[in-house]
Length: 583
Image (tube, rainbow, N blue to C red; front, side):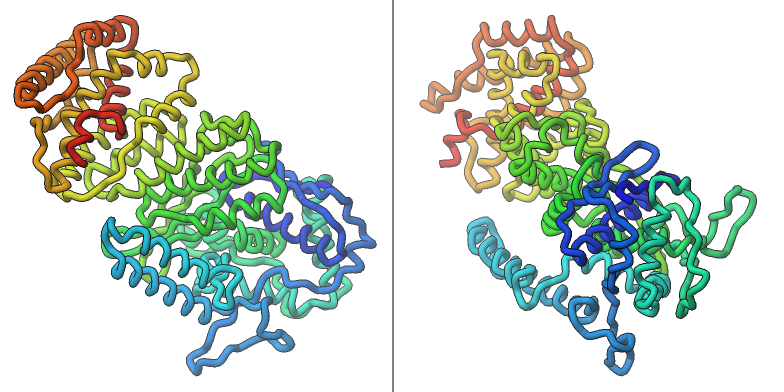
């Protein structure tokens, strides 16, 4: 047996976890037999292929001795004692729930103390240093390490999940004498000739407390659960789905190192987001490396931001891994298809699935060489910083939804919608809160548009001298002056408000945009001239530059020109005249 198939039937991450779980078991088999192998997972469309480099023979399976398919979840009872199965040592084969929970709480307290002690921009350096110390203290190299799989095991240890988990664990642990036969049954079921039929389960062996069916919990099967789950929508079924022990075993072991469980804040309560990355073509060792790094850098605790940040961070980890492996060159989407995202609403004692989604890897991230890797890391890191700084409240919800649509659908117009909103948000933020907020930088924004520019239209507009002069004039009349004011200084020129909204409204037609820009520049030049008499200089926009800009409107969509203008006008540039006021 060399190739195994997991057929897609639910449209959710259930079969993805199943494929990861099968690959995990195959890897453990090879590790015990001291055979070097790197199992590969490939998306074949209707099914996932799990391919072993070295064929697995019956002789190899018969040589197997028992290994832990899952860790045993050890929790203290009311008397504070651990109830371990007979013969099980309190070692790395046990997930020490109470110890891990205490470590998580200690780390959280230390992080909160660091932010409290080193608050403010002037203490950024000390705060970063302390956070690195905390991270190292609880890392895998330390005695107080936090298990990278804590999030999944902690969910599996809840009352609704624990019963099914223990049944799976006991199937193997209580039947060690038949362990190799159980593993053989699993492999036979998924071998390429199985045609979705179960192999004949052990008949001549007496199994101890063996569960042939396991409740299909919503943690691993988001489309199944108690309630409206009948095959036909003709009534309510008050029972859970039952599934085979083989399928649920693999979903559970696949989830342990491939699922991400993250709490999200909604009002004063917390719901749960579940993420499972879907790879298109990858070896298990690389998948594990990428997901482990991904889990260390998770961001966000609100529903929309967490989707955006985590798909970008996942792509970042792929790009960083690509530096070591040229097989990852090409479209990032060819390696990572995207991220399953499931939202579970907290109902008190239980959680209920309220949304099942899939966030696609953008189609526009293409890697041809190391320079492309460095450029995209720059671009994505800047956008992570910007999204992270936004509070998911009020109007920002719609803006973040537009940005998520941009990532998910590779829809540039959605990025423009976000850009208009963010320009106005910057002005309001500087005005109301008088603290620093991240801006797009001119240099990295140009790299972004250059990589998005398939037909050459974008860079023709951006490189136009008239476009650059007007963007600079708007920037020197708006966000740059607002930043100066937020620092407690008095701007030397008048701040123009509502420019982003006006650009969005006037860009619907070329005539309206041309009229608005003409009026804005006339006022800008007049003020610059008056201030020049007082030895306060600001470069004016020339007639030639204004004519150049008007020519853009004759040859391009006014909506495109206006959107790019809003994007660049509120970006940060070191060469703007008004930046001198901050010195």
